[in-house]
Length: 128
Image (cartoon, rainbow, N blue to C red; front, side, top):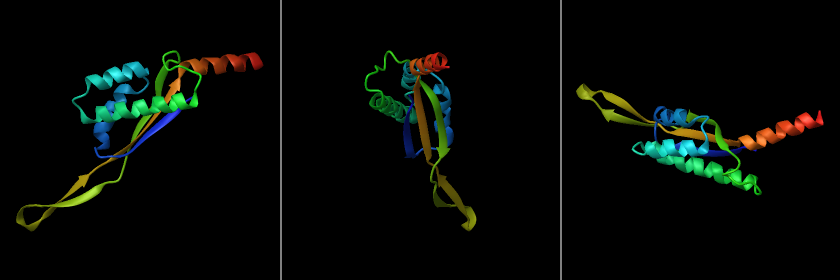
């Protein structure tokens, strides 16, 4: 079974968040944590690490009898969408004005187990 975690209105640009999301897409959960820990100088790595912990907790709630260590969790899907944009005006030379766009993003993370997919495929073969 898969579990979903969402981070809405994160106050950084989607482009910066996608750099880290692309690094951990499709990786095992342990490998993703290592990647995020060693990218700790980026502010978004702490937010993604917290989101990944939330997704794992959601998976534990759905699968009460299973252990995380035995289930081979991996990041099935992660995508970053643009969120609300706050628009401001900055004075510019000669009476003009430049627009400042403070971007935000929405991150959706889906964690799945490789063990559960193998069991489902064996059951479907036996029933057929």
